[in-house]
Image (tube, rainbow, N blue to C red; front, side, top):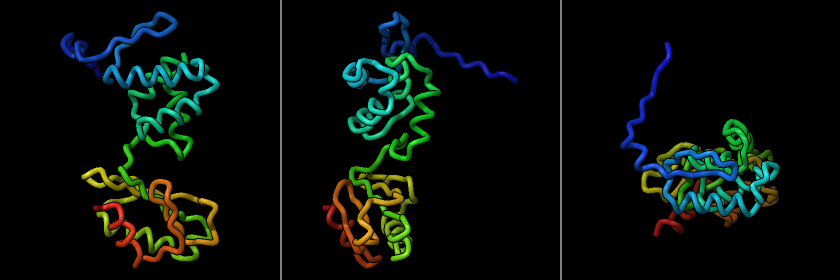
Length: 183
């Protein structure tokens, strides 16, 4: 059974018209400013499909994550299938299609950190923030994810909040770390 999606003409009024260098026109449900930023990023890499990872990296740095609409625009600008962009985004753990919190918390669960109690530290963050791995707090302030290794094994277990590294973290230290970013 096939399903037909009908988009009313009124819906198109809210979508931006974008014409690529190939002359193909598409409609995108993104604000004009975001479209311009994506175009600027792609242009800075000469709209070269071989620069896809660099384009996605820059886009994620700019927007914090890579929603489907951004992936559509990147594919359009680089003249590649959206499936190829999606494949790269979902293959590399660095890329995220879910917005991260203002203060992203990353717990290293590599061998050294795991052996020294990273799992208990992770459980404490989950308990204190009331969210699971991959989620963001309702206020958008914190998100939690796990990393395999940050290269600071001598400081295990290690937690990163943004770019700040916390070493030898115990479950008792979790509340203090969260408090630093709560005020």
